[in-house]
Length: 174
Image (tube, rainbow, N blue to C red):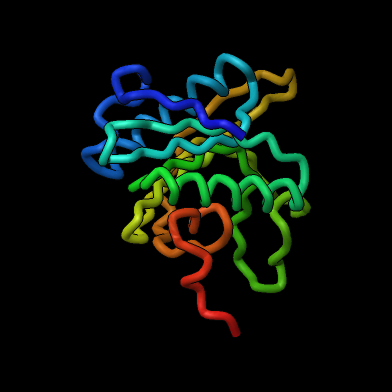
């Protein structure tokens, strides 16, 4: 896997990414929305920002199953740590469910009340994370519209997608 390496000035939809997480979130959300509106789908992608070298790394992640997803995220994490990435955005299509009762917890892709969305997470090397997204709505004719999501208020996430800047050797094994 070879990332696309660009300086910030070469990535027109993503200006001034080095300033803060909010700018990366806003730019990445616009970037993902633009791709989805042009192509009708959105391949998962990571945008890593290295402050030290004024460089942005864009990595597409075309996984097909959980094994590929594990391998891809592990590789991207190694690469991001090697290139001293300070913050990154994950831009992806997701299934989401608002769970009202613990007995309803299941994989969103299998839940009957799931909703399709474009979701963007920005995570920095201090463990700070912010997110935003759009609901994807399809009418009976297949026409797609995007509606901005309200903030979820969720501030703690865990898992392979949001822990790429953490060296796995630092995890405590139980």
